Image (cartoon, rainbow, N blue to C red; front, side):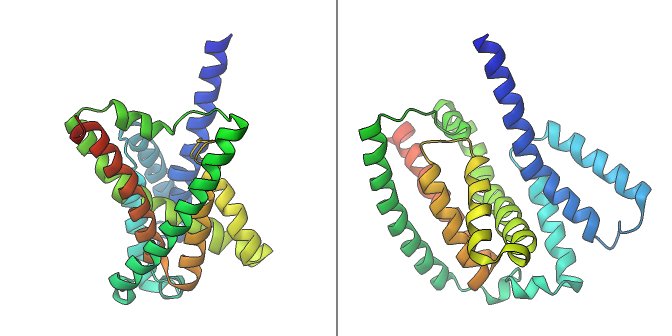
Length: 242
């Protein structure tokens, strides 16, 4: 009975993550790509090939490539390319570092409060799957997972949750604040990590502000910094503390 429930949970988790991380970029690309617009046959074959490749190539590589293609297409004709800072020309590293330092200061505070609540109420939960993978990974596999966590995930997830859901879908309909909250909830839920939910919500909400006020790459950079600290902390714990 328990094995069946676990299998059902894993299937549901796979479907949800696949829809958000893989399907949404595909739908956006097919809808907005000049090469495939109004060409049903080509769009269909491209979509089938993309989905098959996504099932066999892990580590967010396929949606990452697609998001890069989307941004290249956006540069040609989409007003959102400049409005939401998809061009790297306006990106200032110094400002990005400053925003990330401020962001992480807030995350530390949230983490302390969250830890107190978890301890006092004896809340149980599993670590995120990728964290478990890193804990079990060999040195080489750990390094292989690096690009997925540090580059692919920030680029794809900021496009899906901050640009597509927050800016393009929700904000025109329900306003900025509710949109930031709703897209942040979706972001946290798709990570399937109860214990980290407060921190994930905080990161998502801050990144919603960053993309709305500063631009896409500031949100990506903040996501990169957040993931980097976790990644290299686990690296040091696993390989340097022995």
